[in-house]
Amino acid sequence: MPAKKNATARPFYGMPVLDIVDDTVYNIFNIRCTILCYEDGIFAMEFHLTIAALSGETRALELEKSRLYDVIILGGGPAALTAAVYCMRKGVSTGLITMDFGGQVAETSSVENYMGYKYIEGIDLVDKFREQVRQFPIGISEGRKIAAISDGAIKHTTLDDGSVYQSRTLIIATGKSWRRLNVPGEREFTGRGVAYCATCDAPLFSGKRVIVVGGGNSGIEAAIDLARVAEQVTVMQFLSQLTADTILVEKLRQYPNVDFLYEHEITEIKGAQAVESVTVKNRQSEETRDIPASGIFIEIGLLPNSDFSRGVLEHNENNEIIVDCACHTSCPGIFAAGDVTSVPYKQIIIAAGEGAKAALSACDYIAKIHD
Amino acid sequence: MPLFNDEIKKQLSAIVSQLENGVTIVFFTQEIECPACSDTHSFVQEIAGLSDRLTLRIYDLVKDSETAARYGIDKVPAIALLDNADNDYGIRFYGMPGGYEINSFLGALLEISGKKQPLAAPVAGRIAAIKKDIHMQVFVSLSCPYCPGAVSTAHRLALENSHIRADMVESTTFPHLMVKYNVSSVPKTIINETHELIGAQPIEKFLDILEKI
Image 1 (tube, each protein chain N blue to C red):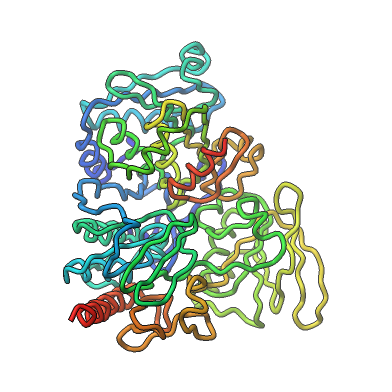
Image 2 (tube, rainbow over the protein chains, first blue to last red):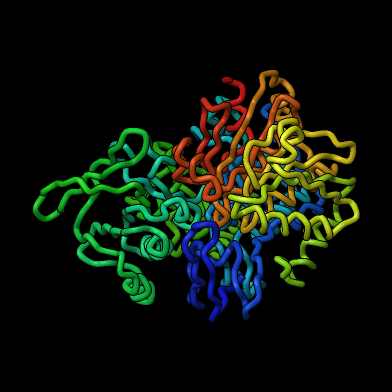
């Protein structure tokens, strides 16, 4: 839903005012007036309805361990789901293994550059993708993480519960996920002060001191969401300047309760039951000190979900799977597509196109085996 | 002044028209010291007005304390959902299910009415095998797009197994519970006061914990 102009909001049950962002299109969530707001002087409740698609018929099946599939697709985002549709239409036996559907698109509030839709909510686009896949009798395994893959005439995919699936080809489209700091305390305090979704968790930090790690677009967007509710927001940046778009930085600078720490990094997150302070290091002077904070929002970009293919496939220095222009990896019969690969520009429409290409390459490969 | 404008009302009507059977909305309120009660009251009234298949019953936590005790309601505003034979599956909403949470509320209405997506056979088997009493509290915020997923999963588990109860808890409405359970990221699910699950995890991850209890 496009952000509305000129609307004002009221506080809701002690929650500070959520004002409405302007027409700037943000990639990840905006805080919009999601609860109750005045619109032209009238109370209006804003809902994010995403539930209408229940009626779609599904022919999807369970993935079978005993079966040798022509193609198994790993992932559930636009690359994987497009590959699934192409494979099913080509008539090769296909399985799909994913933790969940949608990948990063499911976390994106608005999509305005996927052709055919001037505007669509990320979650709605995912529903449409999923429905298009589930009209086919494709084998699906949902909810398990991929632990390992193996090379050979028959590829084996092992999941974190030990189950193994077999296929003649693999299409890896596992995308990227939020990068962690990897400092002591981060994992322990996740959900106890360490947070990765500012839109979700900002209301919980009303009147508190928080730190946002990362000076890119997602970091600055998070800081804006938090500055509305928190007592004090500190933006911590590894580099000597912010890398976010100017328009976002200017917006953030309007809030008086925001300060910036450049060339600093977090070395430890500390507390008893929940986060109480963080240790920060000045990257120039190497000096360290503790800053009190009850929330740490980590917005330092994305990492490819490619660990399970290390040692089997060639990766580049960013740990992305190296592919050629037909989505071949370094290993015959294994193809890759979307954000997990070395292809430049991570976009939904590019991932979808790459997924189609990987599927066609995989189908070619299978046709040659069967010849 | 109605909460729903015509546009939203139209969308909501289209969704509740998919209800297969009747659902009863049992709403608990309180006259004083409940700032969220009056808006939630309007919310359930307007929702119930959208379909003949929806029945609304309203109780007061203090005046109707026996009824509240029967439904295990200890805070307001609270909503319990029952099927057309008044069966209580332990599905609760504490605080107003507005914002993104409207999706989990509508989803629960549809599922209790009988409009359910089938579960995969291994998952259904694992749910049926749970014999211990389970109480899940899913803490949410209304601006959290992932939260309805966690709430719906917990509610589906409650719907499928009579040993399981599941609450949505709107965090900022119940700040004392936020403190008690250390809620600083949502969704966060507290299970039987002893286990917790962070994030909108798939049903298998919920089951991994339920099976340990």
